[in-house]
Image 1 (spheres, one colour):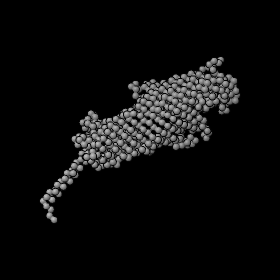
Image 2 (cartoon, rainbow, N blue to C red):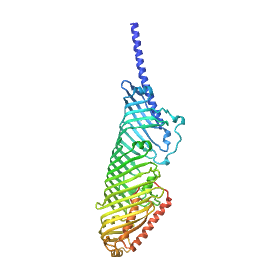
Image 3 (spheres, rainbow, N blue to C red):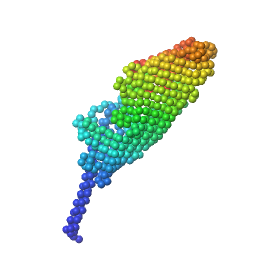
Image 4 (tube, rainbow, N blue to C red):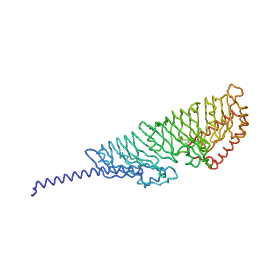
Length: 571
């Protein structure tokens, strides 16, 4: 049947209309793609490469769907000294409430809501400076200048990421540094713009970040697990619930997994609250800035097996103030508080023997001055803490530590009240072969001043009805025990005749931490009060030889003035 002239005109109009619709569809998708490519170019200035697949733009619905999004670090950014990079893989993202006029006229994305569902997020970093290499400019100067329009290229009322998974990986380690089971993120008032220097800058009004089932493997045999974490902005607050730090070995056989003597740690913290946390400073400049870090319900177990050989050349262990000053990462943390916590130290001298223990219960404390950003480079720390020793004696510690251009200066005050004398036996180590068999210690008060190398202390010790005995390993222990109890001050009270104040002068063991330094001063001062001089001289000869020999090895291995990084240890 022949097509009439009117029919041909109708078909032509239909074809023309279809072509017009197809052109509109293709052109709107092309416009959306160009806007996305502009955002991708900004990301390239920040060291990232952005790729994506099909783009579908609904003009009437003001909706863009992007398939196969991939954000990966540029290869040259991995060579930068601050090599810490992110990558994101997502099957699709939805952009709703698109500002069509801004998209068509300026090729920029202004949207109401961006949603990314179930992406895979990876963070890669280099743990050591020696593993990084310095690189020149990532691109020629003329390309670094970029588009200096100063216009916003991306603005979103909200960005929502749901059911994300990911991990943080040290590029030089086998195990992930951190793996996240579920991550949900809600960002408000988010935007990216080009500054006068041609570099992209991030704007953010609010953030709600929630992480669940976070875990990490830590060398040499530890496992870290966090039940949940929440971070809020502008609340500037982060909360962690259920943090556990556990070894994969037990205290009885961990000696089989280490070559030299180290401590074995285990910890559980109910709640960690970080308030006044400056998320923008962390993202923009890498600064850890916060007002307070609060820990509640911490239970810490520390084991030390002294039957394991000591390292023949132990490295020098700088005190906390020196370590803080030497950190490359800037820190400005006003205070750390700990409440309702318990710390137990276990120690044994012989392989296979049971551990003796020293427990600090109901621990309350505050550490202030964790700040390494002072103009003069000085660090001033103050620790004030209270606890009960073995759930009996009350203990108070006030420690001040400063570090500037001079060696670390230390000033501390320790006070113990109402301690059964027999508990002193648990506080002595293999350098003091003395134990108390009866008596009551009403008060011990030590004030100590010193520096990184040596210090002197004054110890007041109020006690009565004290009896002691020497260990069988001491030559003529039976005779010396009888003689010691004959001449020892069984009572030393301020109102009693012959009241004595102890003095001590000690050298810090350079391979040991601050609490070992504190204990040396306290122990020597107490012995100076309780024991006769003849016995003290015999014990001090052995003690001095051992300490001087250890310090000589440490100083030979690391010259004076050279600081190393490491965590403080209890003993």
